[in-house]
Length: 135
Image (cartoon, rainbow, N blue to C red):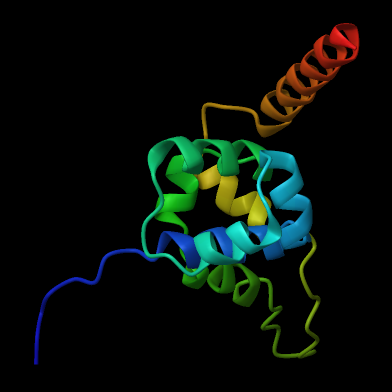
């Protein structure tokens, strides 16, 4: 029995975050300029080079650190803690918030996700305008 700690499977983390964002592999592929098969390959890899990870993180609206440190257990913990354990009524109130947003808050307390997303969209618009000007 080994006590060796298994490294995080970055590809699996990318896949789960993409799914939580309700994004298809094809959409992620288009947003970073690769094929859907490349995304499939990345999601099957234990490690991803930093440059590609940064591009994927930007497309998913998170930081590379969030992808590296993503924990599915934390998401399920948040979901599980939304159960109302009142003795008079055992009703599952369900999630009243997006558990993934709570996870993002835990990793990025000092940064506002909305501002980063708006900035990323502005950069995309600027890039598209440059491309249109070249034609």
